[in-house]
Image 1 (cartoon, rainbow, N blue to C red):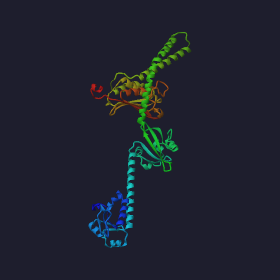
Image 2 (tube, rainbow, N blue to C red; image 1 turned 180 degrees about the vertical axis):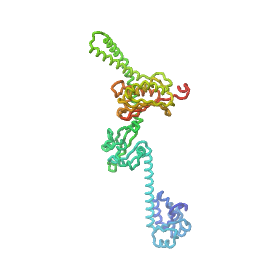
Image 3 (cartoon, rainbow, N blue to C red; image 1 turned 90 degrees about the horizontal axis):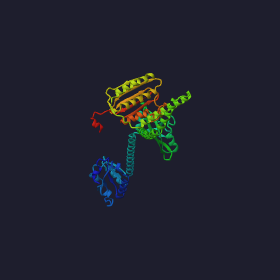
Length: 493
């Protein structure tokens, strides 16, 4: 190794000794040295008092580092040396070195050199391991913090010992405010032992020593429902005991919404098949029953009790026929003609008709129209039907009176029609069902109003949004695609 080996080194070293001592030292240095050590140490020359030459097969010393017959010659040729290591331990040589070494050069005897190299190597290895560990920790923390899922690290009592940045951002709190809380308080806002879950995943993980999961939901401050899936995974210590648990909460609202829409589509397909069967197999005998009932009602010689019973048959026949008509209309594609619809005019006309039912029920109806709202391409009668369905539902939710607000506005992508009431709100447990066919909380009607509304809006490429708070009211918003400022041929394309 050339003299430049010592450049930019903290310790520029010359080694002094006989051949056996020098080879022993060199072997120790090779065994202990690593990249961290070599960044600090540079051996630039070797002195062999008494002459001699190193063996040819040990090129590690003789082939790369200059060798001199005495230490004075070595120091003259290498003034950069600031530390001399004496590797023989001979007292006479040590005394000579102490007497003649320049003040700028530090003398390190053999025993001290062994200690020095071992200490420096150990220290640098420890520093390197620490840096590597910190790098791994930072990389792992970065990955966990960038995940959208909320992650908590729990002890075996379910108390929080750590969390990722997603949790801190959602709660708007510092880490010290969350450490020590029950994971229930963070994931469900309650300190109940079971967190309000149907099945407590943490308890199951501690019991079975395996992963567990459950699903939960919550109504936010904006009245919207969010669905979450909570997973727990055990962390074992060296003895195989569960000493920590990783709890993950993942927002599955979007996926759940898609699943509900798929289930509804499958249900509609089944209803379509059923309605075809009912139209052919039920309406014909129903027509016969109502025909004979009408004939009997017109005949003479019937007492009042018999007429009452025949009247019930006719009423129920008509009710069943209306249900069948609603069902058939619901399952058929809407083939009504579309046109440019001014939703402000449509709202004004519809609410003038619905104002009387509102007054009769003690409901104050307010209409707030945005004059800049765009026209939409739809069938005006169907949009009017959607609005009437929403207003009727709101009135039924305000038996003791209240306030009804109908608004129009414009967003970046949609013309918006919203109906908001101050009724009793929709409980969480039935919120997923209200757009399903045949679901009704009133015990009357076919339960097709909201399902029909969603079907109409979906078919024109719009969206339906629901916000509800129990005891505070409900708001249903229809997002209607506006007419674009293009030629008819381009729009139809």
